[in-house]
Image 1: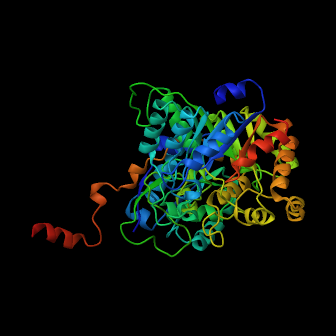
Image 2: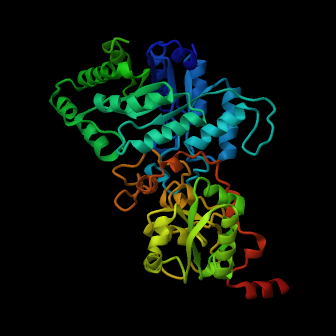
Length: 288
Length: 227
């Protein structure tokens, strides 16, 4: 079933992500895909996540498709201009990839090639606009296409941002520009997420709440200090600190968060970041 | 010396849609040389706006607008006229528009596109920066340039990287440009401008036209081609 069909069916949709390797050894990538196959409705392949050069999302998505896993192609605007981005969108369609998550992208200095020239010719909103244009059979230069692609477009949003109003303003713009589904940045506070969804549901697009598995209390503290829009509350950090079996605790917390937030959204997006083997257990514990 | 050109009147009038009372600010610095902000141009624009049914509550032509303190002082005698206005139309380069926006409590519309620095960055040192993009978008951002204030130069911001109003890059020193834009528009009661959906930026306009390409070394350049 395609992601579009899964969301339309009204079931609680679950997506996950896999990050390709820095190199051409796709063994681990394929192993992770195998772990997720059959348990989640679609899998994102990240695009040079955190501006670290890796095997590309397009190639990763093709490999997932070969394995029978529904892929979500992630595109950022950091590395490619509008010519390359439109071209990659056409390439994705031709390779049978229709789900596209349109992102702005982390800045180059956050990654391992800080001297690279940042592009940002387009941003998440204009990338969505460009994809929609291509679907109408035209490119951004108003030239007619020989064959128009079809996409199921998505975008992201950060419910934990402070202030959150700019995120909501931009979320509405993304919907107007063509976004049909959202995957959120990780949120660990159900009340905050509920408040966010009270506003966000007006825009009419399904939202998959972001869940990042906690590896340790130290990881939670690190994210609180360094990752924008993520806040792990003290109670959860204490739980991780006091837990004897960290792996079990991280699964328990993730499952609890999903259960606490599933009533106000249409799905969950689980970002395991290396802990993909735990995702099936999280879903079991969450009753999914 | 910053070279600016007047935006086409339909574009300027587009910015003023829904507004009826405008205060015009002109510039006797670089904009005077370019005839984009001098008194004759201000008066011509005033007449044009009045022909379109707008009321010009007043105008002021200042020596140069790239110094916020000077702008603020020179606008003080016009406080009542500015209070009565819906917005200000600022006829100068992107630096002057931003400097004016920083010292008034109204939306500031840019009347010009900034084409080229071609030399010094304005008459005076200030904190505003202009990328001479040739397609000024200050109308949409409450007078804060998204290309220079936002590290990524986003036209549709913010991104998800800002934390506590700081950019994800060098957060100790960089503000999130779009957070500044959000706060400015919120203060002015014009968050509707943040909801606009502009087309992708025409970066081609960043290249100045041929006639403006010569630098301060133009005399030598002309000699060189002869050899």
